[in-house]
Amino acid sequence: MVDLDSFPLVLTRATALASGLGRARFERMLHQGDFVLVAPGHYADAVRWATASESARALALALAAGAAFHGTALSHVSAALWWELPAPRRIPARPELTVPLTLRQSDDSDWVRVLRCGLPARHVLDRDGVRVTTPARTAVDCFRSLPLADSVAIADVVVRRGVPVGELVAVRKTQARWPGIRAARRGIGLVDGRRESPLESSSVARLDGWGLPHPLPQVEVYDELGVLIGRVDLLWRALRVAGEADGKGKFRGDFDGDRSERGVADRLIRAEERATRLREVGLGVVRWGSEALHRPDILAARIRRATPSGRPFRARLVCGPCSQEIDDCTCAPSLRLSDRGRDAA
Image (cartoon, rainbow, N blue to C red; front, side, top):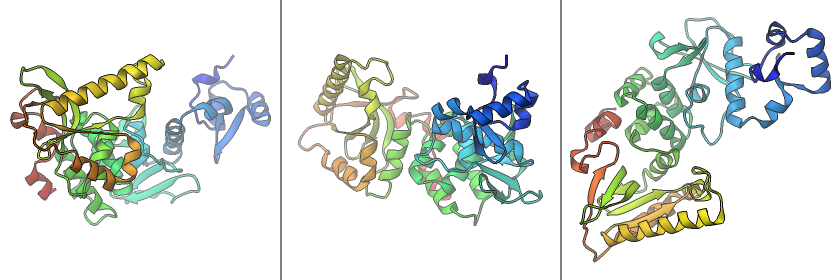
């Protein structure tokens, strides 16, 4: 008995037969609707396909396209999904592949987008038989092709995993005059590998240009007695405002598994108690979810209005990732560009 769950999510007829599924059985399953056609010459188990996430389906199609279009490499969003980077809000309908200018290859098909452009060997890796653009090249390609909020979230994870921001700058410089390269320059200047969630990254990107100073990420706030109040997602130090980018899942229990009414209530109470303590040491507090990013102008106004007045600042600020005083942070140079570096990026 052939285990269909062991097959790739997307496969060709030849792959199915080579894996031990008899021709007659394959044709019968296709006729009965157990297999569905998901791209020209490519099929998927109907149940697995229907229950798979959008990201999983997109990656499966990308892997199938990479195998079908020889000499190409998964790139852009397809590569981001392969590297398990944050998925954009809108995943392209077609897999994205890049082929070098020197290689003859067919153009776009109705189900695959093939981009012909410069693709140095150093920008491609072969992992588990899959040719895919490097994380740095993937991040820069996404800067050029995605909304800034999505691409900054992708690049932040790339840098947090150990790719120097300077490597993104180096890739960008090989793409001079390419479409979208100005967006890449702007985006690289916003990258900070200290951020811990796509919502934090997207928030910084969406707020850029609305007159706020650049916020510090993941700052630990201590009171006068040296007691840790908590780690805030973003801190506008000049405004003395702490920002909490809290998705609904944090309070619903999506992360700790406790979805009971009491669990939800306890998380809300703890969040409000922490906000109260932050205000007591002289910080304003603003909390938002993903919906607020649709109106960054309103969110920026909320942040400016939260600046405390008449209350002294009595907190000690520490960089969460490196545990050093904010002014002595040792991790920032490797995880973000300096002000001078942003000008040169």
